[in-house]
Length: 60
Image 1 (cartoon, helix red, strand yellow):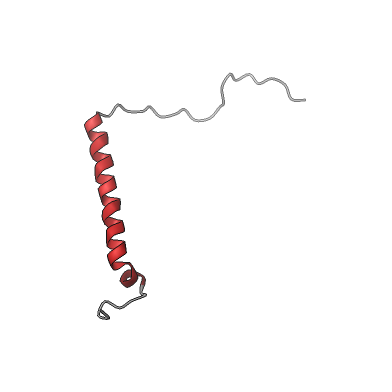
Image 2: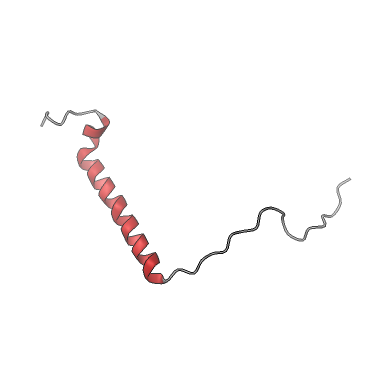
């Protein structure tokens, strides 16, 4: 039969410690990551059909 467990919390591997990161690094990482995605979407808008093979670059 099932009875009460002897563990007060779930078992499993321990969680890793969360490092303290200064705010400037978090802000800079967020800004650079957003800039990267904006650039990728911009280039995909401009060059997407060529990269996917739907249009040839010499067919202007």
